[in-house]
Amino acid sequence: MNRLQKISLSVVFLILLIDQAIKIWIKSTMMIGEEFPVFGRWFIIHFVENNGMAFGMELAGEFGKLFLSVFRIVAVSAIGFYLFKLSKKETPMGVMVCLSMVLAGAMGNIIDSAFYGLIFDHSYGQVATFLPQTGGYASFLHGKVVDMFYFPILRGTYPGWLPFVGGDDFLFFRPVFNFADSAISVGIFLLLIFYRNFFKEKE
Image (cartoon, rainbow, N blue to C red; front, top):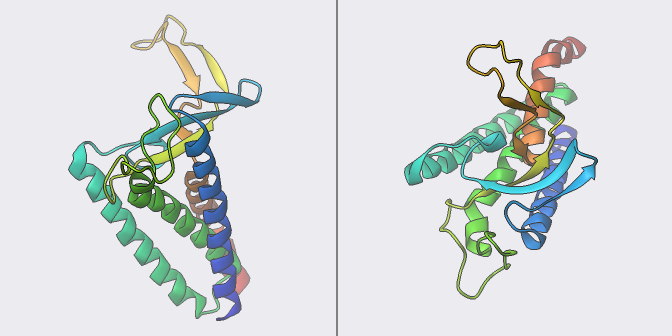
């Protein structure tokens, strides 16, 4: 195993470890909708679950969920294969780290979808039990993704003169997300911003 492969594996392992530790802690100690502030009103731990993509977006229906789970597995396999090929070349370390972050984030959410429905019961009105005797709340690949990071940074009301939304309340930032989502977003963002610089360093 060469240096780039070791770095990639270390990044993936560390992100998965942090992501799953947070999710298992949330799932094992909180009920759906339960929350507590971390830093005032702008950083809140708020437990929700979703069937779909990053930041709570969803594909409707049972087949939408299955399609998304299969798509994630295919995408993770493709990214993993691509990383393996890059690791055999003189690929800049920054590119490898960013792609490893994306890979780890996708894997983290796949774990939720694939296994959480099997190993936990539901969290509605109760704290979920790990390995319940009656079985989990969903079948393989039909589990829900655990989200908890909520940043309602800015609250207010749209001016009345604005068409369509005038007088309505607004909230920024509304989505609730998890550590895996953060790894994916930061990895992609850094890759897009610094991609040319990464390869200039190589040259």
